[in-house]
Length: 447
Image (cartoon, rainbow, N blue to C red; front, top):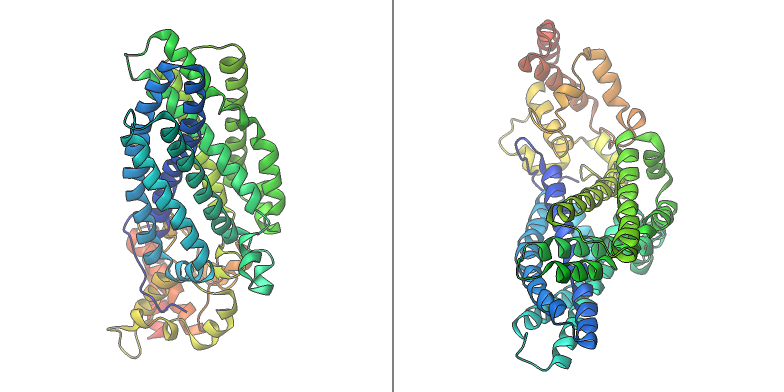
């Protein structure tokens, strides 16, 4: 069950590290996909209309794509694989083994994307216009196909659908939220790339006010599809598991607020683009472009937060809990014990560890991925003021009282040890000095 070591990150926790890296990578990846569409359509339009200003901007834009999408994107992509392989080894292994050929397909598209992108940037003015345009469309197509394949794997983690019964990889890939995920990520990609283009064109004084206005109005054409965010989000909502729906509908206030903000912000940006930039042909300066881009970034991050949050208490819904315990392993863990299935945590331990040490290992195995002492989601603050009896009662019924958390498993001895450890933790943090005797009495009674 816990055959791999735990990765403990002071202050943040391994789960938060994954979240931060993944969020940055999603922003970069979406920009890269949207930028490909803008470059392909933009160069096609510019060459047809003989728009030299737009061509000059697209050359600059392709350089930014190289720096942000390829350089920074590659670093953040490697960081994701590094972090998930340490923090969620079982889930990573399950995803690789389940979708091995889909990963291979995605990596082929990614390779084509990279080669075409570098060839496109380096061949400005060096190859015939027709050939250069072909490179743009190859890059845009490969980048979107990479998004298409990844969307199937990511959406599977929340809504595995029939795969849970059949084990068929196509049932897992073509899951209930696959298509809405593709549409949502495509809309987000176009929005982020379009607003980035507006920021970038304002950074170059070589373009006149009229030229910048025309380029901004062209980029705005990729923003108006954001008005579709609300109906597509409803389509996505209909495909997620029932408990995940309750979290959005008020079961978790943070999920509800972030979901509503993400949808509202995206829709408003789309409405502004249509009426202000496409219909009225207005100009926006650098500060306004940065403001709109910031709103879009926050909206995207909000939606990613919701996607991750409503998957709790699972990493892979109905199959693997967030603490790397499989759903069908709960009874075994309760009968055989947690330490019996965690060989790395038994190294250096005496045959019969004292309750405090046993409780510490229980905490490290089942809690430390999401809760960090004196850091993010500090469990000491969450249980501050709880007497020992209340803590023991709640831990025994953790999954029932807080369904977004995995069940606490272990033998009776291990559970009591965790209670003792947490009570002593409160005492050491100075949450309530009166608990000192309670914690000590618990340790003495178990020794």
